[in-house]
Length: 398
Image (cartoon, rainbow, N blue to C red; front, side):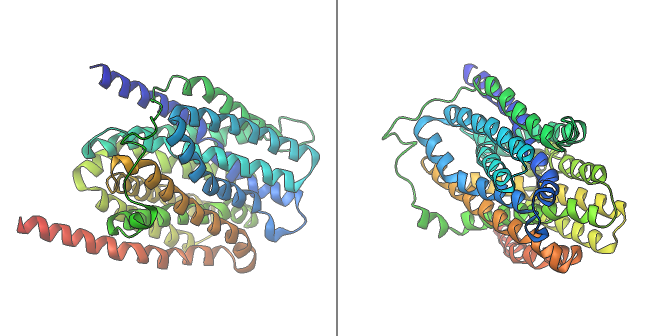
């Protein structure tokens, strides 16, 4: 009874923390390229702030995993939220001073905060059976639904809050969200690991994990789902403004996109329990392909909005399904190593993709961005379908 109450309490804390922490991403992504255009004279590097945000997320994953393995999840999450406060203040100060490099430092630091926020989904699955993992992960991701409302609305409400310094107010609000997360995270009950215990010692090495087909496929599915989403979303606000739509239209487009990313989490866990994590992941990849097809069909605001909504929905099924696949592909004593490795690969790829996104948009346009979706999906969807078919044949034989 006490253990069940503790898990419910932790789940509530993680949902609340996700609601605040995940709101930073939409702020950085919807404004990063626009502020970059404002502060930099080189249009080709306008999306660099968003790219270094993803780089910070990628580079922060392994240190975050090591800190949590050594000191426990709560200590790590408190450190992460403190970094989040600093990131918003750095970005706001950079905008006020008009220093592009300092603004990139602020968004990079926001990425470090995000590397902790991203592990809330794994924290929800700690100690649960395979059947319950998908539901717990989905509930934490529901916190992103609240973040999808908070982040873009803060952009609209605060981007002109400081007279003469556009967008600085939005990044101050980003710092405030991280500050609000600190007392909530203090309520998390996560035991400090004991050195030499079964939870911190043993298990497969990084090389052995990467040699495991089930782990490697799970990582690849998460990488493609998240990588394509970030690749397209990084360019979307600039593409919308570049094709005659307003900044408010771009912010609303990101809001609809992020809502679509997290709203399905209310049912994704049930779908995983009923149909299996591989089928849900494959469905997500197909929907991401559909988003690319819609984007290629036209440049009206309706095309942008529908494409971004499908992109978010596909990400939800693909990424949550892949997360459940990762959680089932490692033992308890491999948890920190496997999860940290997964996030490093996923967000390292996301960072690389976003670095090219802005330059590719400037050089080749919005259409090529979306055409590249299809070969990337095929690389993962083919082995995923093959694995599902093998599983079905095995179940039929049994």
